[in-house]
Image (cartoon, rainbow, N blue to C red):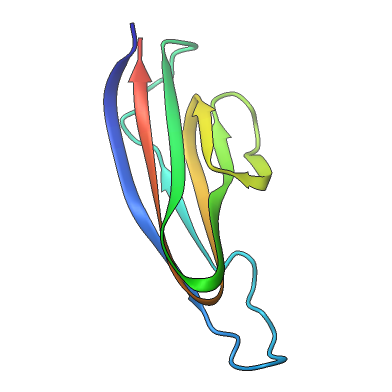
Length: 119
């Protein structure tokens, strides 16, 4: 039986204005946030726990907007796992993750949260 042991969340805001016809677009992604998962059992056991990460759009006032998990640091996998295209959810023994938000001509707000499950 799985038990929700902890959860934490936050928001990410991004905005960009091209400044007129023919102006260059901004860098991709417009904003990033790096989250370090705390409350993980230290040292991490080989099994018995998992972190679930989710992201989503909350408000879009733009020509286009997107949000996603760009990368995750997992136990025992060496370098970060990079997602291309970005993912909206990630599961496993995750110790940290990076959320990216990109917007064209306007503003957006997105959300992220992680949950620590134990069994």
